[in-house]
Length: 250
Image 1 (tube, rainbow, N blue to C red):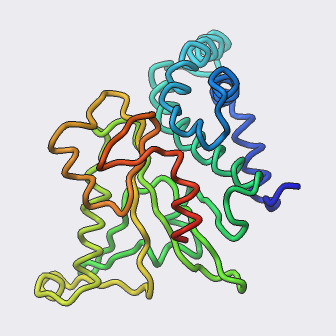
Image 2 (tube, one colour):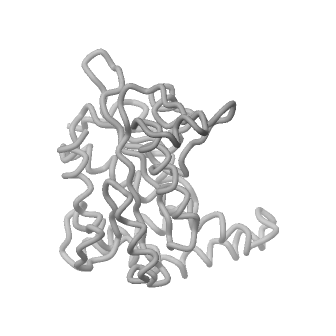
């Protein structure tokens, strides 16, 4: 029996019906069967899933362009690149929750900045302005009275070239806002939430930038970073460990 609520079931249904997600999700299932992986293990191969599904997605773009549904195939391809990764992670998370591998009081949202329970937690005041992190997903837990318990905000990037620094800079700003120091007073930095979110980063590292020294140094600012590739590293974890991380920390 599924542990998903109506909203989560609707999210699963919507993702599975997005035209470019159909071949991607098919490749996810094929990859699992081909390599004998369970769903959690398949998180370590999201890079391969996205790469292997590109020809099928490209054929769909050709069809839609020929039918007049899209005008600029290059622009459509660019939009798909980031969105597909986010939706693939969210879909897999919800499927894992439906299998009982994620606690029932843990949820995921792809619009954290506007989420009623999360918005205050991700807002830092700087004078009369506010700063929010570059975040694509948030995984959060709620109490028995449906109040926010803990939250893990995630920046999802297909490569490290894509604004990865924005999130860790916001994390540094959060550290300043929640400690006693002259910088906070100098710039009038304020933070109203009574609890801080965990800040994470997830990538599939399309351009093999992971071992660049400058990028490696960036990862120490995150509470946890994950990669959708089956590699061993002392500074980033395999994405298959995400379910365990959220169950233990949220």
